[in-house]
Length: 329
Ligand SMILES: Nc1nc2c(ncn2[C@@H]2O[C@H](COP(=O)(O)OP(=O)(O)O)[C@@H](O)[C@H]2O)c(=O)[nH]1
Ligand SMILES: [Mg+2]
Image (cartoon, rainbow, N blue to C red; front, side, top):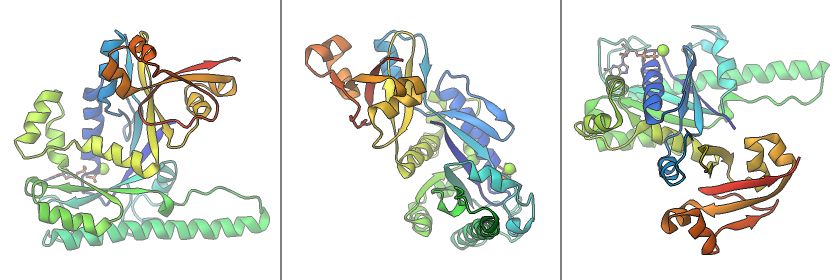
C-alpha cells in the first residue's frame, strides 16, 4: 500500500522548503534508496525504531521501512478552480493523494511576500484567511467536478468513483518562526482554528538549515530552539491515524521490513500487500508481538513461551505484529 500525501497551500508559505526538508530528513532517517521521482515527488521512509531493533536481533542485511510519497503541489491560489495560477493542473495531483497536508504560513517575514501582498500583521487572522481561500478553491473544484459528472451521467449513467478533494483528510502544518515554535498560546489558537483536524507545527526554514546534518546534530540543533518534536514523524503519524492505517513487520536475516495496512485488515489482506499470490494462496500466518519479542529476546524464546501464534484467514492484524505467512500457489 502506497501512502501518498499532497502538500498544498498558498504560494510562499514554505511548501517547497518543507518538501525538500522532508525528503532530506527521510534520506537521513534510513539507509534506504529514497528518491525524488520528479522534482516535486519524493519518497520518504516512515521512521520506525523497531526496525533497528529487529535488524540487530536477526543480524539483518537490509532494512526496508514503509514509505510515504509526498507531492509538492504548486498552483493553488485564489481563483485556481477558475484557471488562475497553474489552474486546474494541480487538481489531478491532489486527486491521486489519500491525504492532504495543508501548509499554512504562520511566520513573520515581510521580505517574503504573502500571496495577498499584505504585510504580516495578525498571524492568526491571516492564517484563517489563507486557510479559507484554499478550502474554498477545493470546494469550487468539487462543484465543477460534480457538474461535469452530472452532465456525463446523462449520457453514461455507469457509476464512476470520483475522489472529491474536500472528502480527503487534511492535516494542517503551520509553518511558524522561531518565536512561534515555543509560543504555546499561539499554537493553541492555531490548533483551534482547524480542529478537529490534526495540527502540526514546523519551522521549514530551520528544517532546511538542517539538511546536511546527521540525526544527532539535528536533534541538538532543534533542541537549542526548544523543539522536541519531529515534524516529519508527526506528519506521518497524523496521516496514519486519520487514514486508519497501521503497520506490521516482517523480520529475518535477509531483510527487516515494515508494511502499511488498514486497521482492521485480516491476515490474508496483510499478506496481499507483500504479494497478491500470498493473499490468493494464504494458508496461515505465524504471528508474534513486537513487545513480546523485545521482552523475551529471541524468536525461540517467544516460541518456547507459547507466544508465537498460528492464525488463520479471519485473524485481524494488530499494530506491531511480526508475521510470517504460509501460502501455497
Ligand atoms: N522566514 C522564513 N522563511 C521561509 C520559511 N519557509 C520558507 N521560507 C521562505 O519563503 C520563500 C518561499 O518558500 P517556498 O518553500 O518556495 O514556498 P512555496 O511557494 O509554498 O513552495 C523562500 O524564500 C523560503 O526560503 C520559514 O519558515 N521562515
Ligand atoms: Mg513551491
